[in-house]
Image (cartoon, rainbow, N blue to C red; front, side, top):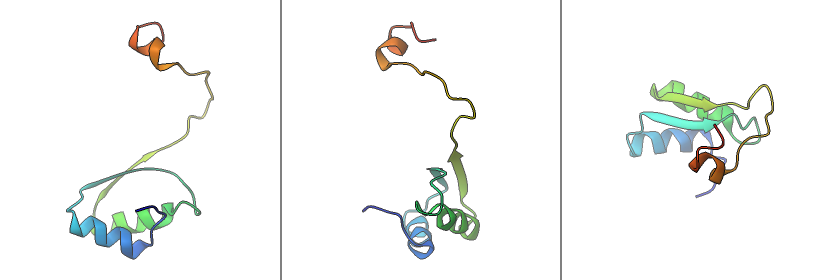
Length: 71
């Protein structure tokens, strides 16, 4: 399945799979974020939102992190 989904579909999936947490990014109106928020409120599901950093960084390459050079 590929979203974005309606509020009703989000709510139905939360109920069907007994979901307690929803992890999402703030995808805005186009990404169905409001529908996720409303479904989480309606079902008392904990919504965990990943935001964008306020300051952009260069970041690290996975190999740098794995080798201890990125931290």
